[in-house]
Length: 572
Image 1 (cartoon, rainbow, N blue to C red):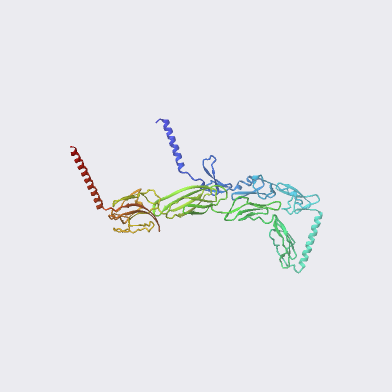
Image 2 (spheres, rainbow, N blue to C red):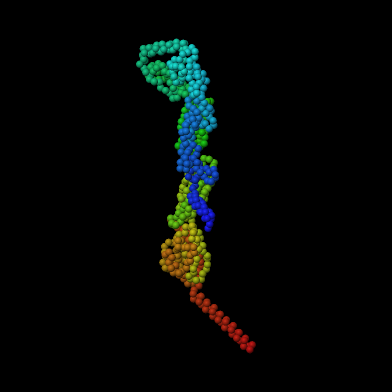
């Protein structure tokens, strides 16, 4: 072999060595995908690969964890002037105070171009109060006083919602002096009244309300309430009066959300809410399937209800059962009209046949909701069956003990014999899967009309050396001792399985029947076949007949020779 041939040979060996292990270690990739992953085709179509679903990160097989999109920063994921909120498998964005989403929604995802833009607070008339002048800023605003007014309780510029400053003119100052004098006179009156010792304490808040003002906590004081931000007054009084009994009374205002009660979604609960948005999630035992999980109060005062649908969590393989001891049936709980691939693996064993093993598997692809696959299970066998939905990565298992069936009729060739010790032949496949326990040979004398019941109880008691005139069991042989071809001599005087193979009586005719018996636990099944007929011509009769035939032959020969001799001499 030259150097070039040697090089080519070594390259071929290297290729075979590198490819063989790969073929031997083929992995069912889809069955190993994580529950939060999908099984996809590789870009080069060389196989399958597990990829974590949108909103999750990981290797696709051993783990897929929630991806915190907000960790890279709200500015990068949501845009300027935003706050990012992470959820399981997703996220959403809100605008900072002083900004509003360009689509006027309280929460959004910026993949449609939505961004936060400055709110022009100065477009609201009177936001700075009387005598105030508004100046809009990026994300906020401030106020200053017009000519003829001066700032009180602060300096310019001021923020009316954060500071106590406000603009007052000369008339306003006189009015404030009037209020101060009136307040002093009212207090003096209350102090001299019989109920001057009554103190109602701090006014009690009602749901969804805030305290606007209170003249005090003594008898006759009045507290005024208003609905909290995001709520509107529907009915009732917004004033509460401190009574002589020391209790606040009269407040009956009812405040409702601007859009009314929050929307209700079946099988869901509220995860988070504010005055204009609600985030829903499915309750335990249900999981989300399609749709948005956010309800938003629109500018028109109507809830834009979330489209989230919560469906009951069920295993991908449900109501698994075996029909007619052969066909596997189950309900496919799928949430999409897609094709699922199922792998069925089943293994069978027998208590009475330790060497027996039946291991098989098959695959099934289907879109239907109710499936059936027949497995051709063998009788009298203990089976363990496992079925896996590959894309869902879910496995269900079931066990079944198939019942005993009648064994196949033994393969023999019927013949008639005129010898008292005929040799009969049984053909049997060594790899048969029939659960045959043993064979029995019955010898029945032929007497008039006969009836043999094959399904009669198996006689397991060995017999003595005497044979019954009604017939007897001549032999019992375990199936493990019967090979591909088995020869049996009727009437040889030996014991087989404890049964005596008695010699046949001379001059009688017999039928020989072979019975195959399957025995498992407390059940027995059998099949029978007529194996042979033995005629009973006696040995003396046979010898006499043979002697007579020989004698007749000799006489005929002598006559023939005499005639021939006489004719010869006459010619001479």
